[in-house]
Image (cartoon, rainbow over all chains, first blue to last red; front, side, top):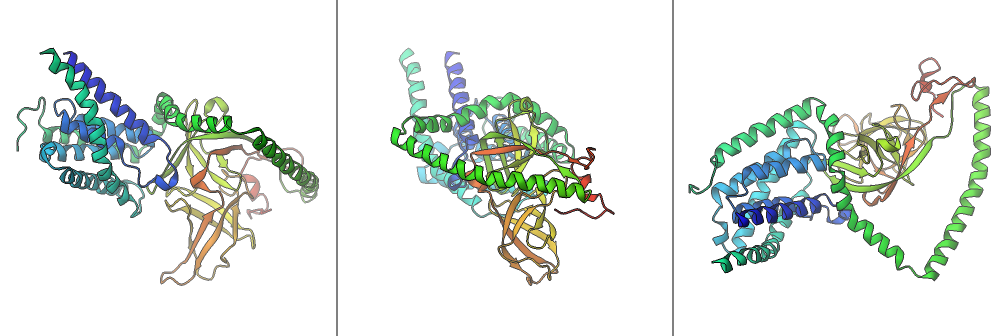
Length: 166
Length: 298
């Protein structure tokens, strides 16, 4: 029970921090190379704690992003859900992959998310192709190992007390 | 690969629910305007989040101000005083011209516009990607901000307010895909509409005939015809004029004068309404069509 609460606290704190990072104004030069922190965090927790975080969490996070950044409501929610589904269904054993394979998987998932987001924006509003957008997908993949190592460390620290309890 | 150990509904079922929900949201948001009203509340609820996200920048700028040396401050002060004196001398001329203009307009029985009120606002968040170009500013209904209010910078027009909450508001930049502004060319008073492209430094003037008299380097100012923006404020400069690109219309591109990618402070503007010489208020846009339905361009 104690562990469950601790896990939830950890998950929501990291999600909150990622959300703040997402809406933070970066210099314009970094606008396109800024990774989607919230997406990476959600994907990380889906892999690490599939019992706690799933498509529902991804949907809510996407919707929050829609509301906060001011997109058409539901577009991010949709693409986040699809990305979470891909991970849940196909790549749930991703922790066993090598880091390079993990990066490629993230590249693939994030790319699908970008295409879905673009397609919906195009269908329900106005959108133009800006090839710089692809940079954000690449930066997602590049940021993944760093995020994994930092979050993995925190995760390990959290796990240790339980081992001591036994 | 099945995930029998996962609790709750199967992932496919969850995805189906998520897809249904998000499509319902997307369609209702793009077809009706309930979300604009809802954004007032969500923005009010989430405004602390923007404050937190903005705090690192506030801290660093405060820190930078604190570590300035005395000699730097003295130098700055001297520079600012010089600029102030120059601007004041310009203002003397301007004051006289304004007075003269009002008199002449009264003689011609043209409408008169009094001074507008402006207020400085700080930018809290910028979202500039091809899908949308928006800024969040730290003034809201508490300060009298209203939807459709023009926002200007020191070099030209920045955009207009789209949603307002109590302490902050969201504004669309002129380069947003969904934004257009009525302009006129200063050189020959030719009127057109400049639309955003989704790129931070580009506007296009669409649907112009190929023989239109626009040249590279022409200054475009707001015409005031839409009734939202005050007339005569600089908007953009023409960077590219391409009369024969294979289609029926000329291709005209312009670059906004205001550096939209590095904004920090903007000016909110409350444009004053037009008055007839005998003091009757005739609103913002109607004044332009006083004489025989022909626009009265200054």
